[in-house]
Image (tube, rainbow, N blue to C red; front, side, top):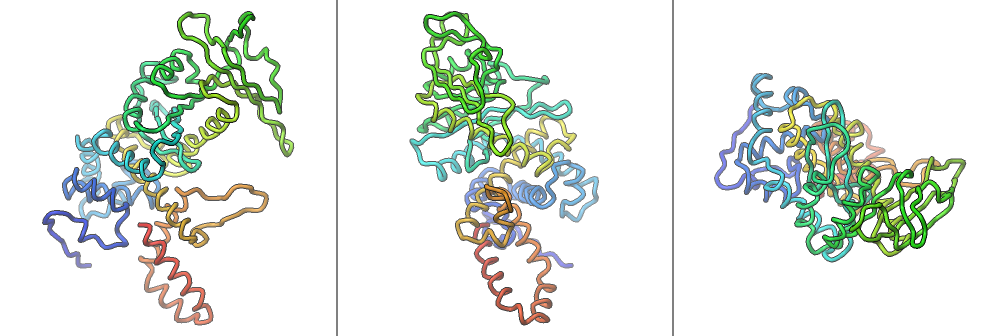
Length: 401
């Protein structure tokens, strides 16, 4: 096989065939201004490997990296790439995610921001993300040096860059029971940020004119809702009063939740609290997509520095697939990518992320198997009409890339 090498004179963007553009044009334009030609091509190849092999282990990436050099050289090439100073979250990722949010969410509207952690082996990844279309986009992340929950200082350090990026939006921070501290709520209130932070049932609160009592003593039962204002959430002085939203989903189709929600908030109504807190599940879906349900992040044995930059590559790949899936759906071609409905399933089967990911794989397979497809179409002329429709769908889907 002969490979023609094209030397870079200015930008590589114009020399890249349309079917090899794994990233949207604005990703490439920005990354081209920050990385050298070699670095950008390596980044694109690694994103391509993430999308098609769904694996972040350096050994597995090296085994599939399409460079005509020794395996050990490919492995070292990836290792050296993953410690480049150019792979900086503020330098490389913040401008991209800011552009994505600005184009997808109207300035001045509400943005739901979720805090959460995921850990495997000795790794403890702490992430702040923006909820979008039942999934989450990672904004900023850090690997904690200890196991278990984050503390207030770490939470503040993760949130501060997000405040600067989302200036001009109405921010609502949501978090599970790890982020229940009244200190965090008070700090967010000072920053003029809304929040909905789930509480443990053993926490004490005080209503006006009453003594302190545990949340579990409120007698919340399936189907019940409460919204209380003027609540003290700690015996310490100086934090002021907040609101308490309580909700226990009623039993449905023979299934019920094990316990209800108690949520510390400064939002003005129960419906507003439930809407934003229910959206928090988007970050759990993102973690699943990045771990065993997608990129298999937990298989990586890399050091923290390389892991941090592997997450950066995943963030680029993940948002890219989500945006491409959105375009495919807008063109009405998702039926060529996956099943739209399932029996007894109320929600659609595939998210924008999976539609975009499968779309990339389908297009690449069609490109690789072009001769087989042509021969199959010739020997099955009775299916020509369906093949032609599929080729038109393929052409439409390619415009998403």
